[in-house]
Length: 380
Image 1 (spheres, rainbow, N blue to C red):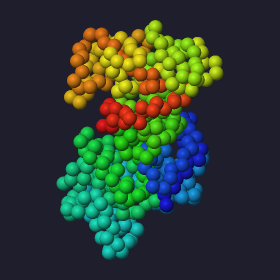
Image 2: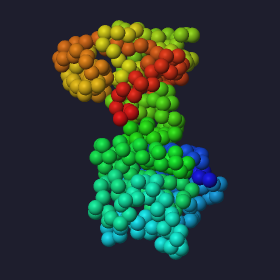
Image 3: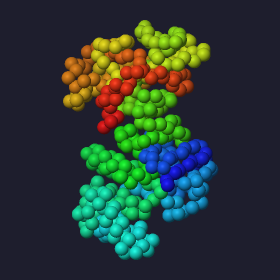
Image 4: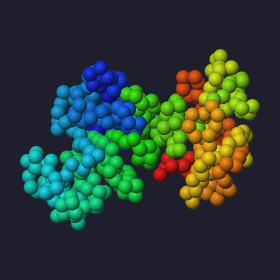
């Protein structure tokens, strides 16, 4: 088994509440990722699950058993940290075997479990080497191997790839995904990197200021964010937000106006919404030059040519931050030259004055666009 339940979990440090009544169920065999900006409470929440921090209120249950008062070693978990925490004077075999030696396991059992873990992690030929002779990715695999031999109910990962370079992070994401499939174990993974969250998770838990902003599958959060925070956090570059005025609503959706342009967005209307100031959201990858049901004139100030794609940034009056567009790599584009940034209503999102999303009616074309959704930096 490997089921986890968080019930109204709270953590305070003095007068500061950093985790604020979190409720969450993690099912057996799931790969769940906690993601959010620095200070949102994701690592603190993981440390409470591990037993490294006490809960101020609420209950943590593993396989239906309350574990608040149990030490880490009694919770059936294993944790992999950002720092590898390897013993430099021990070889790989002894580093992986360490928790088994603490438990005084028989030598035959130790050898069998270490060799099995090493085979899974492709460390068979490294068992006699010391950590200083290994690459960063290999050292992280040793740390994971040390967790595997404990056969835990739940694996906990606290930003394990943060110390690796970009190429190694990409390789390790693939290895961790394969490891999850091979072991079938429950894994909870903390990161600030949405690429890791989008590419590895069965479900993502987006945290903001100690609260859960939304829980869902990666593409669910991408296509149907509950609020502006999730919409802006999931996706890189972030979603563009434009202030608009609601001019009416009906069966087709909600009609809005901005800078003299009118558009009917296929979202469910709410009573009394007419005349309100709303926020229109459009992702950079859904913008095309000179094409679409609506268009606004923008003047790119920065153009990044990446080969496969071109990313352009412009400033708009009334919009915080840059207006961003992801365009084909061969797109003819120059800085300080105005272009028409076009987009379709079906690709737009609408948010009310409190930043909550109006329920989006799924565009039937959305199922035809998975590649387009990943053309930005979301999919790495």
